[in-house]
Every structure is written in structure tokens, then in C-alpha cells.
Image (tube, rainbow, N blue to C red):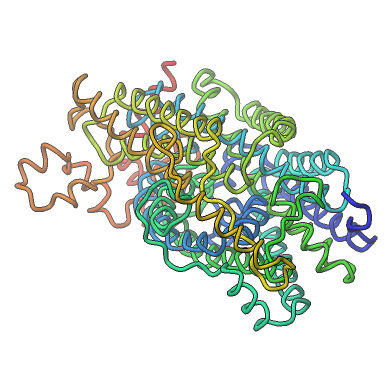
Amino acid sequence: MDPSDQKHFTVVDYVIFAILLAASMGIGLYHALSGGRQRTTQEFLLADRSMSCLPVSLSLIASFQSAVAIIGVPAEIYTHGTQYWFIGCAYILGLLIPAHVFIPVLYRLRLSSAYQYLELRFSKAVRICGTLVFIFQTVIYMGVCVYTPAFALNAVTGFELWGAVLATGLVCTLYTTIGGLKAVIWTDVFQTVVMFAGQLAVIVVGVQQTGGVSEVWRKVWEGNRISALDLNPDPTERHTFWTLGVGGIFLMLSLYGVNQAQVQRYLSARSEKEAVRSVYMVFPSLQLALALSCLMGLVMFARYCGEDHSAKLDSSSRDAIVMYFVMDMLQGLPGLPGLFVACLFSAALSTISSAFNSLATVTMEDLIKPHFPAMTEKRATLLSKVLALSYGLLCVAMAYVTHLMGDSVLQVALKIFGMVGGPVLGLFCLGMFFPWANSTGAVAGLGAGLAMAFWIGIGSIVTGSSGKRPLPPSCRAVLLSDNTTAAIHTALANATLSQPSGLKRFYSLSYMWYSAFNCFTVILIGLIISFLTGPMNEGDVTPGTIYPLLGKLLCFLPERLKKKLCCVTPLGQSLSAQQRPPQHKPINGVSVPSEDGLSQEETDRFLPEAQTSLVERETTV
């Protein structure tokens, strides 16, 4: 990079950045020294199930709104236009379905890990498979989240790359290890505020320096960055309304329905109502976050008219242009560059701290505790902290290999969730919605889903099927001759007309369809194998693990046939007939008061067979 183009932090910027890291550490220390001082696994991993909906909702936002989104979305809008904005349509069903389907099932079972559900519904083998897949997915994604902000900062300011990686990883590891889930959630609240403030500052200053709202609008309109509603049903088109609005629903379900990092926040809420309310509160905040990121991309385009600055930045990634824009806009305003960098690292800290805590939880609850049922609470808590620390160090190591990945960070991140999160979503849907699915079918379905996911994912990388090409820079501020502009348009038109065929077309499937495609693969193969090996009977299914979806969809069938197909009685009644069921004893033995004010003796009578079954299974291992 030309030193004359390189931007630099002032002392004020460094101070603001340091304050962010210090405040995050302070929150962790506070929760390490207050309350129960993180002496039990319930407090360390689940915040004593005492959180209200506001901090839980802000934590849900922070976990999703990573540095990948803050850098990746503006770069996407700058390069391809506003079509990506339509993913906001997927947020509606992508949040309503978890609120009214997944949360009621998982919360009422009083689990610590989402994958305990898989043992209740299927078997221990399915639970372990689900846990291992989640660990694999999250460890890879953590590397992307840590590397992204450090890389962008280094590309523009020369800030030491691995120094930034180590600062992010170690600070996050420390406050997660000493403060537990409460520290993670409350730092997420603080970091969410910083995120919104940083993005808003950049947008306001950028609009002002570009000439005002009308000038920004004129340039993005002339530059063809305002995308119309694209109803093209071709699944190989990278971004259309269908890929974003429908494929995005399955991506959201894999994130907000069955991902341990989000499920753990639902389970930490003091009641089921609080958990559901937190999801409703997430919706407007996610729309706001999406709008800010998209607006930032438009202001960037109005400033640079789509120019490719990769040569100037010594980087082939378009993601670095976001940090270049920020430093360019805010260079003369001491403190504001530091605020945006704090915003960026806040997003990274919130995401990876959630990952550390959830990884420690599933490893402890799914892989260690079942084999050591007599482990003392003190030793279990200490081991949970060691696990969080170990995953933190692994995360820093993963950042070293992240730079080998191609595509934009946004596309890489969503590919990871689609390739791995889609099969896990299919596994949970197979268990919740299809009572006759058995353990053999679940394992076979998950294996087929993962095989299909990696076949398509790796095939798209090897064949270079990267999807839609960038729009040309056509803003009038760009000094190109008419012949050059016409040549660019002609070349892009020819490239668009040459559609891939055969296997290459299969590999060109939009990454936004990965979750849906892999989810349905798991369900289809799982059901076929279940019928071939002997479907489960109604009496063999653990009560409370089925959501009566088929019973509601097939309400026109005779009751006898519906009961035979859907097992609506008594499993359906366990979720639909009891509007406010009493709170059951959690499986870890921690007493939780009943919402209905029942006495302990009355509550004991409602202890579900699900918990008894799980305890018996874990004790006999």
C-alpha cells in the first residue's frame, strides 16, 4: 500500500479502542466477583436462568451482528447493489418460527444444551453427532470473526495484524472464562450500543462529506446500485428475492432456532415468556442493523463510485474498502475512527464470546458429564472455565488459516452456516415434526446432508462458481471514456449469458440455498431410512419432544388416520393444550420456581418423563 494513502490512528483513537477492551474486561471481572461468583455450572453456563428479555434480546442481536456483517454487508452493497437488503424479509418467519416452535419445545424440557434434545428424541449417538458438527462449524466461524476486523484494520492503517488478532482473542477469552454467560450477555449489551453508534457516525459524516442525501441518492441511482425486486426463480442466481427471502428463512432458522449460541440465551431467560419476548424484540433491531449496513454501502459508493481500490490497498479482497472508507471519512475527526474500530471489534468480541461459552457448554454437557455423572459441581465449573479458555486459544489459531479462504467474508460466513447449520437444522426438524423418524434415520440423514453440503461447497470453490459478477462502476464521477464503459457493459452481458451446465451448474447453486437444500436432504433421507428400518411407535417417543406440526397441517384427515400418522395424542397435547405448563425440575437438579405458583409437591407430580429418561441414560453410561 502507498504510504501516502495509509491512514493512521491518533492518540484519542487508541484511547477509545482501549476503553472498549477495558470495559469488556471490567464487566467480566464484575460478574466473576459478584453474585455466586460463577461457582456452579448453572451460573457459569446458563446465568442461573435469571435473565430478563432486554439483555437477552440485545445479546441475540450482538451474536448475529458480527464483524463479518459490519464489513461484509457494506462491501456487498458497494459491489453488487441493494438486492441483499431483501434478506430482511426472511427475518419475519426466521424469528416467528423459533419463537413459537423451537423455544416452547426446548425451554419446557429445561435443557442445558440444545443437543440434549437429540438424545431425548433419538439416542446418545445422534446427540454426539449433533454436538461434534456444531463444534466443527463454530470453531471455523470463530476464525473468520476474529480475523476479519484485524485484517481490515491492518490493510488500511498498518495496525499490526496478529497483534489485533491476539488482543481480540485474549480479551474475549479472559472475560468469558472468568465471568461466564452473565458477563457475555452484559458485554453484548454494551457492545451492541457501541456497534450502532459507530455505524451511525460513519454514515452521518459520510453523507455530509459526499454532498448531502440528494447527492448520495443521485450517484447511487446513476450507478445502478438501487436494485429492483428480482423474481428470477433460477436457484443458481446469487441473490434474488427467492434466494434471500426464502433461502434466508432457513439460514435464520439454523441460527435462531437450533444454534447453541442462541438457544443458550433462550434457556438463560427467567421464563418461557421472557425468551419469546426477547425474540420479538430482536426483529426491529436486526432490521435497523441491516439498514445501517446497507446505507453505509450506498454512501461508500457515492464517495468512490464503485472503484476497485484493491491495488491501492495491497489486497484482493473488496472487504478492505470498508475500513479504507471509514478512515478516509473520519480521518480529520479525532476519536471517530477509534469509535468505528471499537464498533467493529465489539461485533467480533460479542460473537466469539458467545461461541466460547456455547462451545464450553456443549462439550461439558454432551461429551464430558454423561461419562462422569459423579463429578462434583466445583470440579465441573472449573473444567467449564478451562474449556472456555481452550476454545479461546483455538480460535486465535484458526484465525491464522482464515486468510486462505476466497470470496468475501460475508459469503464465506454464510457458506459455513449453510453447509453445516443446514444439516443440523434438518436433524432437529426431523425429530420435532416427524414422530415416526428413528435414530438410524437421523444418523443416516445427517450424514447424507453433510456429504451433500461439502460436495456442493467444495465443488463451488474448486470450479470457481462464485456467482454474480460485480456491477460496473458507472457513476459519472469516474473518468472513463464512453468506449471503455460500453466495453465493460458488453463484457458483463456476455459473461451473464454464458450459463454453466452439467455439474458446474449444480455447483453454482446460490450459497443462500445451502441451508434449505441440506435441511431437506436430511429430512428426506432420514424419513426413507426410518421407514426401511422400522418407524418409531407413538409410545416409544419421549413426551414433550414433538411439535404437532403435521397434525395441524393435516387437520382435514380423519382422526384415526391423523393419529396414526402424526402421533397428535398425547404428544400434541403436551404442547398445545397446556398454555402455561408448570416449570419442571431442571435435569441438573437446580430448583426453579413454578410460574403458576404451584407448591413443590405439586410441581414434582409434573416432572416430565423426558427428564427422567435423560437422567437415567446419563447415569447408565
